[in-house]
Image 1 (tube, rainbow, N blue to C red):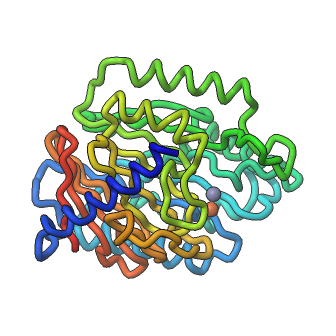
Image 2 (tube, rainbow, N blue to C red):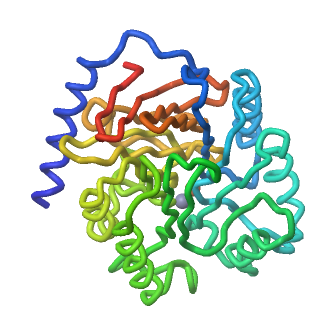
Length: 332
Ligand SMILES: [Fe+2]
Ligand SMILES: [Zn+2]
């Protein structure tokens, strides 16, 4: 509890500092550096009514074309399929809401997926089993080699190490709604051991990010996650992780905590119905907004630039992050 109060207080101090230090205008969305590399991300995208999802997907295509970006990868931050996925790998939703929505002309490279809570639903088939099977199809861009995995991006001259996790952990006192709605306790322990081992390995890249569907801290409806605060947050701090990427709350967020190396960056506006913001960014921030959209990670060996964009492709928040973990907010 002490920690929590401390975080809230520190965060407020950060927000005040951030707004004082913010720049009057945003740097041009086009990469200022010729050799920058780009990753696009979106979360909570595979909604049954895909009207909003396809609008965001169109905005992604337009934005990448307008700025002549050639993204190295697309990260899809979980809740890949809401509702039934009839036929599993053969479900037509794979074509309409995945293959056509994020076309190979924009994303010829890998599209990384992680499991969200909705992916664990058995309706009556396991959607997660279908996602793991779809990733085994020859030539597919959908990449989910296992429930948790490590990758360096781009494949050539990598700039960032990405540790992808399954955040569907057991929450004491919460009864899962369906059987197998979370990792088993054995899997959860195995993943935590693996995470500690991976974070202890020497880095081949200047930057390090961890991603999981559930936020550790969130100003959205789901709030802070007690188990992830206990199990994962100390490891992010200890190993100087630059970014924690998540979805789950259907909004866009960026949270900073004083003296914490990690920027918490949430992109859950990819298509599912939006949620209310429950903690205002003035209280804990610098940014939380109930808005559909996606996110852009621009990378050079010295600097990450992160942008949240709405469904019209307008930048709604942006900041830079250096290897020493310093953060510069680019939007007020
Ligand atoms: Fe979701
Ligand atoms: Zn979720």
